[in-house]
Length: 318
Length: 318
Image 1 (cartoon, rainbow over the protein chains, first blue to last red):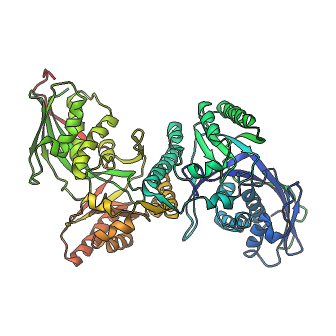
Image 2 (cartoon, chains in turn brown, orange):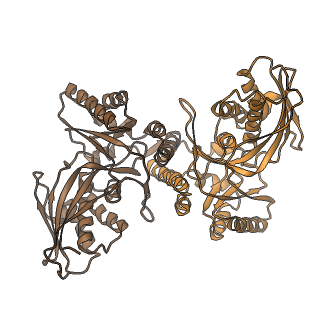
Image 3 (cartoon, each protein chain N blue to C red):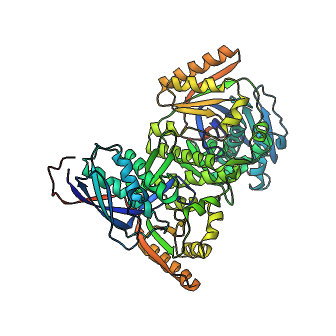
């Protein structure tokens, strides 16, 4: 048990095309850096080391709310300080809030001798997501903690998270610099869908999971189709149709909206293709005169990575 | 190329719980026996060797309609006679019509030197399903031809059939002797479903496919849940709730309506459990005073099996 620790909390992609609300994955980059230490003063202390001016009051901070949930299950009197240096821009659609929440609870758990299970940590981190979006969803939290590609089979009566095997996949993400609120993106979805569309969607979910398990890239590509959410939400993202078309032409297997946007992700079989896809994305947004960032990365097999830094207080009393 | 052939066409389970319209599997028993031979007279000849009194006019017979579709793509002047001995009772919900259609086209293809692909055969056989139910569905045809567990990822723009790996699974089927028309079972389904139910369903489809691919029996069991179709259709099947409950208590992983019913199937990890499940099912229907049949079998890794019998006309001109 060390009294000070550093964690790298990965960006994540939720709502993996047909797998709306159930499939997501962790990215190798970008990742937030968080330094955590046990404090003699009980409770949570938040320190920001970046320029995002996020709230430092624990109950209003994503990492703070997750840590408060964890502390309710930890030995009385536990105190945790976290210094946060975010590399994942809030509101980008690649799990910025999930990284803060997941990184905080995984780090705190390491400081506390790993007393909690991964399922526990997901539940604590979901309180962080509630601060960010008003909803306790695990779509980004699950891959941020488990790594790789995760399936949330069910959330009730208990959370059931399944890790999926996958062949090597390269990921290209473009983040056009516009703002979409998760709550707005939720509101434009209809409560009802056509049964025939739902059947097509779960056929694709089955195909995508089978393709990942079998390492069948063609099947993965064919299954990356969303007939329910993308047609509605993509209208909020300028350039979406062009990005998708040009990415496929550049060789991408397929992709779609990351989370509730505005980021768009594409999967490719090789890094060279992923780079060509990034070039195609840049061409689209340069043409539209919109600022953007692109990332070329891979699916990260691990979730939050703990990097022990120092053992200042090896005999700290919890 | 032999001029006479015998095929065994397996029963199949479609609408595998959460996988409504997309997931199905082949049973090792029962299976129809069909004898096919090339004839000098062009066209299709149907001979029934069982007591079901099915139509023998090719366009009104399931095997006949499938063969007529095949002949439209075969060399002009081809003639095929098929003698059918059905072991799968029509209307039982375990793919009786699919067995006739699939057996006919697989047998005919063998007689014709395997000139057609499996995808072609599925498309021909779907014309047989149209005779039976008014709809060209591939839910039973796909597993009857491919064997094992099949996923129909999509039917448009092209039929996309995926075979799924699976661990050993034992199957118990109970067929209560009541009649449910596929067309009636279709009509009581609503055209719209709640998005939140659809999400739960595709979470389960993802879990089921992952469980099958990973050989994870617990995950398979947890994923055998249908929140959309079963709540509506099960009311047509007396004893359904009791059969499901008692089967789970007897150790079944789970199961549900086979096809559009009235048969109910349950999956188990061992044959002993599958036998205990059969006993539980018998107890339910004996208590209800309903006639029934039970089958204890396995998932058949192959589809229609061709058994060459004789080569009477080795130089037959097609």
